[in-house]
Each structure stands twice: as structure tokens, then as C-alpha cells.
Length: 133
Image (cartoon, rainbow, N blue to C red; front, side, top):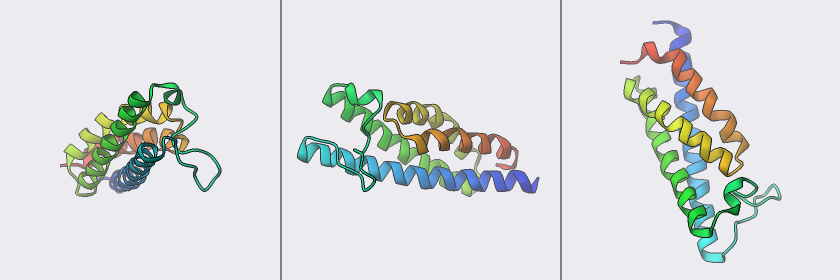
């Protein structure tokens, strides 16, 4: 096993877990606020959470459905990250399966950090896949 491959898998695992928890929890809180107040919440950085992308133009129920899809996908990313950390091949399979969905949802909600992280972590999985059992 190559040391680089093991490190790539570990970094990918951390990225899947960190971004999965961050965007999963953040999206769930945003959708909860939307249900209670009828508008997207303001972030501490001065913009509305999950606003600015093409999904913002969707009907409210469709927007919420896509938002909950991001929550579910993020939860699956956390599971993929855990499995990758454990060195399990199924973590790579799950992570690579969720990456295009995560990328599409990141684009639809204009989430630049997710747009950056999704291909990086998938690439790291590909680099380290031979070390997985």
C-alpha cells in the first residue's frame, strides 16, 4: 500500500464527513427557518442561506424537496466518510455515487465550497481506492 494512497483516502474521508455534517445540518436549519418564517435566513456574512442559485426560482415546495435531498445526500456523505476512514471499499462506492448528486445540488443552490469540495474528495477517493478492502 502506498502511503500517498492511504493519506488520500484519509483526507477524502475527512472531507466527506466535514462537508456532509456542515451542509446537512446547515441545510436542515435553513429549511426549518424557511418553514417557520417563510423566508431563507440571513447568514452572518450578509447573504441568505441557500439563495442565489437557480433553485431559488423554483416553486417553494420544489425548493424544499431539493433542500431535503441535499440533507439526505449530506448524511450519505457522512456515512461514506466514516467507511472511508475505516478503509472500506463501500465508502468509496457510496462517496463516488453521491458526488454527482452533491455537485448538482451544490450548483443549484450556489454553494461554492461544496462545488469545490465534491470533485476534490472524489478525486482523492480515486487516488486511494486501491488501499481499500
